Amino acid sequence: DGGITQSPKYLFRKEGQNVTLSCEQNLNHDAMYWYRQDPGQGLRLIYYSQIVNDFQKGDIAEGYSVSREKKESFPLTVTSAQKNPTAFYLCASRQGNTGELFFGEGSRLTVL
Amino acid sequence: AQSVTQLGSHVSVSEGALVLLRCNYSSSVPPYLFWYVQYPNQGLQLLLKYTTGATLVKGINGFEAEFKKSETSFHLTKPSAHMSDAAEYFCAVSAGTGFQKLVFGTGTRLLVSP
Image (cartoon, each protein chain N blue to C red):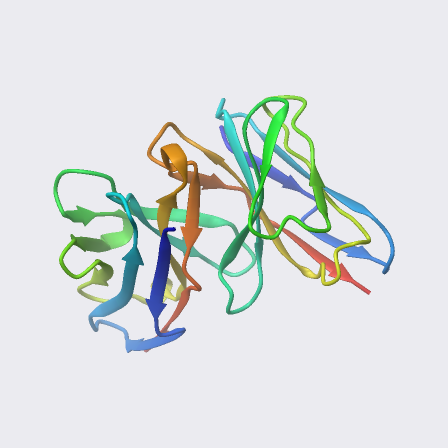
């Protein structure tokens, strides 16, 4: 089945540690996205990539980094510079030019 | 810049009652509009979308929404609520050059009581 796979689903991290969230898609979509979700704040865009080897900052990129070396993969690193990293992270890919996004199941990061 | 406002962080209905979730948008260009549903600890699933053409859009699970340009609204409705409709609902608008991004509202949690 085609879709988006995020891993791990749950992750615990100590303060000061970097952590990388995986996102893989087999939908053959060019564009991929990372959103952060916090209660009552909806989804906020962290980074997005329209094509391999290119990506742009979203609204809340500080403390995060990404890479796009392959069309299928768009990993997100939450660095120690992110002051409040505990959140639910959602990866998505875009179909065509209508803007519709397809989402993964999410990764919940908790900083201890 | 495009933006979305969802009125009411929580909406409660009885099973069998009408569901109405409100969404107003702001866009400097003709918008593409979306409603997504999210169940606990899961990703978002597309309910329906408006791009061009017919302003009344039908989606999955009996939901529909009407694009009203004069009111800048895209409210989501369902004639009869079911217990399984309890979830969080997000309205979104396409933004950016070539509609590269989706901007989401803050979400409305729908509670359905027996």
